[in-house]
Length: 493
Image (cartoon, rainbow, N blue to C red; front, side, top):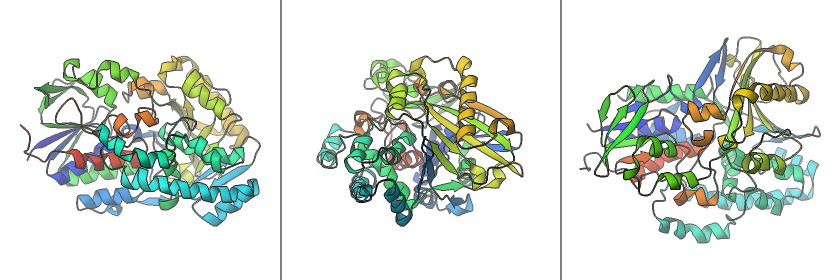
């Protein structure tokens, strides 16, 4: 049986490994970290369980489909729990808006903010559904390998207003500034500035309404464990603490991978679930890269960075929903600070994840586990996180105490944080970005890193950096694209 090597055991790499198994390959994954998951790894501290990265599971059918592809049942490996509301959005003035799947509840809240926006939201959803039909159902799992693939869909993209930003399109239909923030912030979930990101990403709103928002019992880490177990049940191998140093290329084709340990693993297929910029610039010599040269890679704009704080508390906060978005006083100002000025903003917005609201087992009895995420500039900013990280976390905790978690600082039992240095160092992400290339129109589809390398035969990519993009649905779908571009076993020279 022919060997395929997967670099990285994130959700994309694990999904790719299962699909490669279905195609008839013998799969070996080499992961640099001591545990699987990549951005979705797990931290355990003082009895608390913290998901390091993704906390929102949407489009669960993708997981059902993946397991069915290899003759297994997803429910035998993990359990999904619905979350309601999907998100609670807290405004600086004290008002809140619950994003829910039920139209009656949703429209009643819109009417309370601005009655005229009820009809506007209906029109916005009609447009978003059209975008979803084209941008997701028709194109997400199809490769964009030729410019003609992009040209072919341009008429539909122009008709749907894809040249507009998410915020611009929302503002055509919604009058209330608070509601404009509610219906445009979701592009931040994939690393995009709502004022610059193509309105194609309005499909996230439809995707969440159609299939709901879910949490994995035991945390996203249990999903990772389920994928690993499924792979092992099928005979695949996972090797952690095994970083790949370089990909051996001969006459334009993959021949092997070399581990940092010195071991050489022969193979003719490599699937990289790693930042494509890192793979190309660190693992493949420049003479093998006509299309993805150092210069072309340097020109790409990286997405924003993240500051993520993890903390566990004595006692619980039972009135807090599972997902809370705490909006700061500025919106465009904050995004300008992150994406253009590249400075830390005083008026930041936060995402607060309270997994014990859905699964109390994430913390010791009678206690709560939390994860707070703050969008920040990537490392192009040259911010010294070793100096400002701890004071920044203190300020974040102060804001949480003022707006959502009374007496928080006196109740914190354990805490730690990660920042863009973690993403650039441990996760090997260019510029310390959290989502790969920024999801601009000219960095999407054909203009994103291709799923099949244009430079090296036998080299493929899955994950946030390639098509269709970041987010759990995007990463899982990139493994579907893989099956469309893979050469069958035994067909290579």
